[in-house]
Length: 447
Image 1 (cartoon, rainbow, N blue to C red):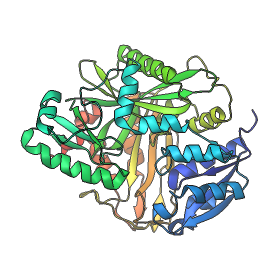
Image 2 (cartoon, rainbow, N blue to C red):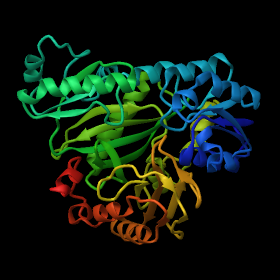
Image 3 (cartoon, helix red, strand yellow):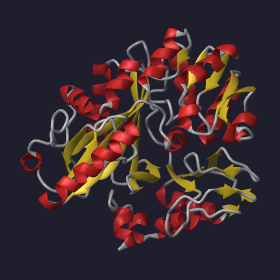
């Protein structure tokens, strides 16, 4: 197969930039990096065929500067841009700006990014496509009758930012006495983080598991799912461990989840990679949570059980190629688990930036490490403190858990604190080993 593009600018940093470049190298696509002053010597810069400085360390002056990024792409002769995840990946203006300059954006059109980035609009759109919705408010939340609105939704409920993500501005409210304070704080956080303090309420689904469906859709009307991932192990609404297939997902539930997701994406006319995230109740009902219009951090577990390269298919779809997958592409082979290794204090779980004096990851069959850091590199205070993603794959879940134990024991990081001991505690928990967990797992573990 021919290379889908001549040269690709990776509009990101860290492990995801390095990971995208790895696929480009295999496909014969040239790569160009962008960097801030804090990342001048970063691995993603060293891994690219060329690189352009964007500006000072703060993201607003570097990685979020759309004009600077696209100027770099044009100067380097890039015919496409891959946004990775985070930063500009879900910015509809960036997608549109790429189109205006005649540069292919490796992702969906700006209209779909905009639609799914506004959580209330996304809920309405998916509801129109027949996807079950969590009971909640319609439209942006008014302060006129908070208690009355909350009573209609029912307690416990969750306050969410309409333009939100990453758990920012999210708060669980158990009763009326907590409501006003939670709304005030959520508005403040959402306004600072997203430039909009619009909120909405959703009923809290107790005992739920966080299940997401990986979707690929080309420009010729073909939509395919690649199974599910269970992302229920979370801390402060941030995913910590992900696995595929989901240990509690029955064949019947899988068929209903994936069928609904494919039908909705077809109805929306969506293109490229996307993830439909759901909450699944113990008795089998499920609800739409949100849709991410980009590559997910946890995409490697899907790659491990399907044998597919999702970045390659993102590139090929963006280049106009047909989604020509085997009929059994969604049938998982074995079991995969991913953990996120961060520069964090393993007890307080607060960021612990600094210089890594020694770094060594395990190797071997069924072990994959995605990282943007090497020995001697600095984890700066300016960006997400992720050091690496450690992914294991084996014939079944017990074998994958055993491989995860060995792999975590083989991680060597010196010079800074890191959360590997915390991950080992989670992985050793009897409920996790049994697959008996939900989104409250880490909270219950602390009690």
